[in-house]
Length: 266
Image (cartoon, rainbow, N blue to C red):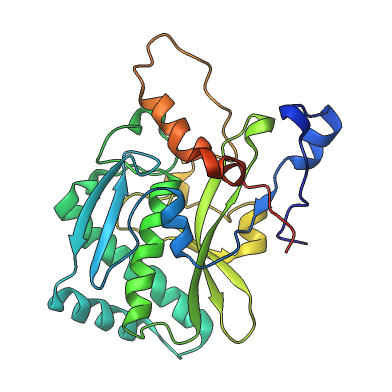
């Protein structure tokens, strides 16, 4: 199955019903280095040992966090202890455990330890809550720091991907991505489904595209953006949801078509 949705031209914003059906459920692979993701969401890429921690949905709130020497040492220890037999699969498991450790470390400082799993629209604008954009952005930052210290032997960090279709009335869902160096196979590293400090879902991008895997029983209520209908307009909205749309969907005016994720042909 192709991971790239065919590019569609939408004249004057109009779209036929048949085209809409084809567009549903596409996965949008983004070209270029992972740093372009940070530019798109107007947040900072890691600089040395400092990362920008996104929260409040769509990176509306941003907090700088600098890893100490002891943090880096502990990250290396967690990775090495979890490598198992040293295979790429074992490294992916180690990445998951390390991301969980980093989330607990940072969450205790930023307050994102209170982050609830899955989709919770009440979290928009709450600096302690994180949506899939926040999670994908943060996870990418953490893995880039790990990569900087040569802790990723079998994988490289690539630009996050998105799936879903606003035109069909479903959210766009983002996930951090890594690529196995030997095979070119991409894997989603998706922290969205569980609360802060839990290992993320890590699976082949093709499977993530289809179903994101099986959630743990205690998290079955956690729903993805791609599965959830858009909320109806409400007079009680005080702007947080509108700002969320602006950050997740519209982006900068110049990048608005890319924000919808319609992949361009290479």
